[in-house]
Length: 170
Image (cartoon, rainbow, N blue to C red; front, side, top):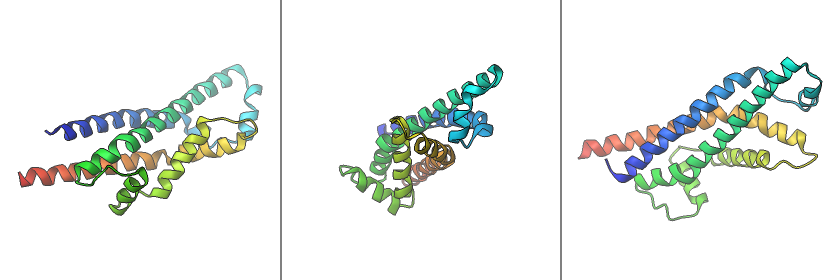
């Protein structure tokens, strides 16, 4: 196994860990989503047992967001370039060119990827008076977890297909 293959194998194992944590968090959050400014405003008025449950759920939301960000970073900063390099593409180019090549290969929708990045950035930096905007972005991220997981699996399948072709040649 080449160094690049070992690296990609490690990256996909790390991705699986993030996916497992996100799926677990989504299961817990399912009944609390989608969020609304009204549901957030009522949090202080809930009975202690309900508050404990909601705090647990919101802790799970933080876990979901953390893992979402980690998986998105892993894909964007490591897997995209490494996989394209493995497939023979020159990766000494700007990130927009990486995205364009991935889109040409049918692996990604650039606009959707950028929307995920924008949503993630929006919730990472909370500003006063933007509660409704942040809630919309949290709900968007929650819904897009499935896409990010499917995207990761698509990249792993692409990697395995290239690896199989190389093994057949050798």
